[in-house]
Image (tube, rainbow, N blue to C red):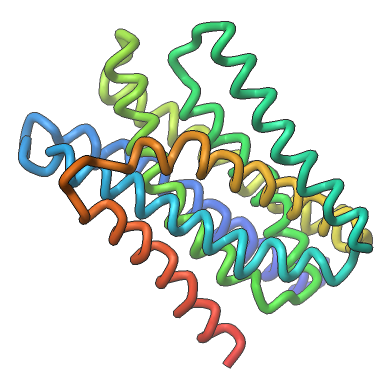
Length: 243
């Protein structure tokens, strides 16, 4: 097997794993409530949520949409983008009717897997946005893991270690999806673009349906600034990758 090919596969696996491990890291941060209660005051928690929303918007605006629209017609781009939003809306409705306690967890996985597929294909295509997308995925997974841990911890009997271990296992889906994208999707740039737009539409739906409403606090302004910080990190990363 070609040495360069093996190195590329290892790079894809490493970046998708690092992005995925931000989920259990966020869960571990949320679990220290009893050690440092002041860390988890309302303003801090809402700021973390808003930061994740800013990072998600940066992924959509700076990587997923700009790279995807180069390979699709306007009609196809609009179709896939709306399909992603509709799919996430359908998942939301289904989880609500099932009265599940894992809506944040499902949303986290629903954008992590297609993003990992797109990331693997982006590395195979030599896309400039691959490194940036990996960084933004990690930034968004951290607060999503934080939020999903608090949801499961408050509504189930799962122990702290069990939830973190579960999130660690989910992180392994990243390398699997990333390698799959690298091996099988690189020859189909239009399909990669469709997956990226599908993920972007779903992410944008989630930002306005779940993240933005949770981030707001009356008479507190730090959460909104947290969203700005999440997005500005995306801007800086984008400028470094295109320089």
